[in-house]
Image (cartoon, rainbow, N blue to C red; front, side, top):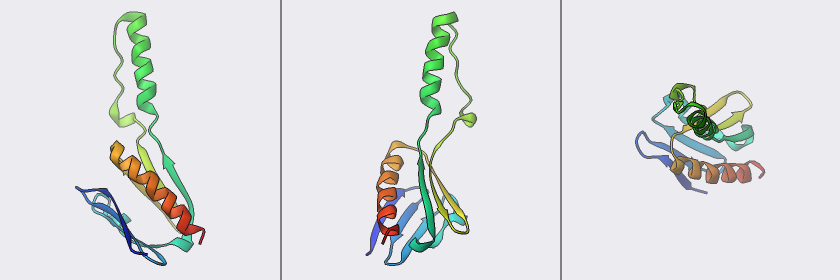
Length: 117
């Protein structure tokens, strides 16, 4: 099996699926780059963003109450991420847009399928 999934172009984040594992090229977080075996995968989580929906409703509520909008601090916003837990380490990739989130869903399904083999 030689399939590639490109999560992001600049900086490049690409998964190259091989027979016994996958090669990750991550130019955003360089320490994530490397080869990972399917046998060592324990759990795969796809964490969706939740704070922006909450902020939208808080903003509406403050407009109704006193006409002053509330704009949350973007640093405190929980970001969407793909987290792959291995026996010895945890791999976390931040998903910065909807394209990456869509590709991450495909990636998660493929990894779960390959992990069960």
